[in-house]
Every structure is written in C-alpha cells, then in structure tokens.
Image 1 (cartoon, rainbow, N blue to C red):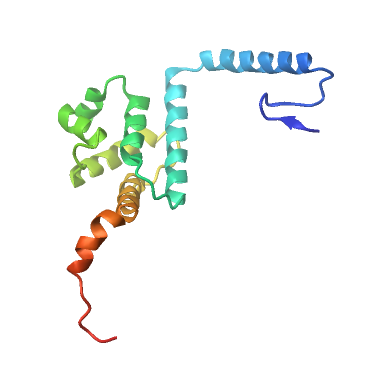
Image 2: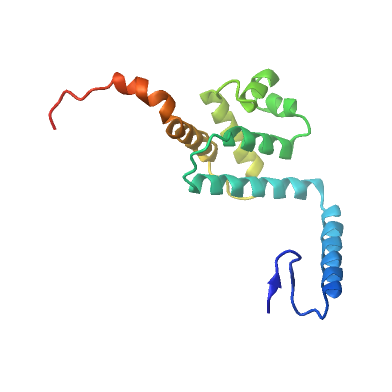
Length: 168
C-alpha cells in the first residue's frame, strides 16, 4: 500500500478522480466535525498544540533571532481570550505593559513570568500536564540563543575587558 500524503488517502483507488473524490469527502467530513466542536474543545486543542510547539522548540538547539517567547505568549493569550486586555486584567498588569512584552519593546519582569506560570497551571489543569517551568525555559532558551547568535556584535568589545592572569 502506498500512501499519498497530499490527500491522506491510500492508493487502493482505481483512478485519480476516485482518489480525489474520496479526499474531498474526507476533508468535508473533517470540516463538518470541526464545526460541531464546542468553544471549550477548540480552546483545549489550541492549548495542547501550543504546549507541543513549546516542547519541540525546547528540544532544538536553535540559534536564530525569532521571537519565540512573544509568539508563544500571543498564541497562548489568543487561544483563551477574545481580548488581550482581559488577560492583562486576569494577571493584574496594565494592558500597555502586556503589549510592550508581546511586541518586544520590554523584557518581561520576573513577576510577569510568575503570574504567567500560575495562569498556565490553571488554564492547563483540565487540558493536559503543563510543567511550571515551561515559560521560564522558553524565555531563557530564547535569551541563550539570542546571545549565542549575536556573538559577532558583543564579543569583540567584551573580550577586550576579559583577561586570564592566573596560570593554568
């Protein structure tokens, strides 16, 4: 059996037309099923997907300049809330401060990360296991990647200030 990944249908069909018809029928059935999902089921699915994306990110030694923390934060908030200001209210921060963190105009404070950790524990409670340290790991993994990928900028100047006077 050969599986055609484009359609998600195997090669047991006698014609390309039959295969395409079955693929269309399968997609229609999936869409019909998705339309019947409750808002709660959709939120849970989005949260599970986000958790898996974050775990995958943490497994990879990525050294690029993408803003994963802020992207994950946006996905998290937008999965649960229709307005980001409601999230800001729930964690007791000013909406402007949240916007600055999301848009990388300000680094999140330690208290922000703590509140995010607690909020996530509550949000994921009935979805799946979500480790307390995940947001911290994502944030600091990004910082490490950013520092390592920008060595050509900071290293020459810093290296001038570092010496080894002890004999080894």
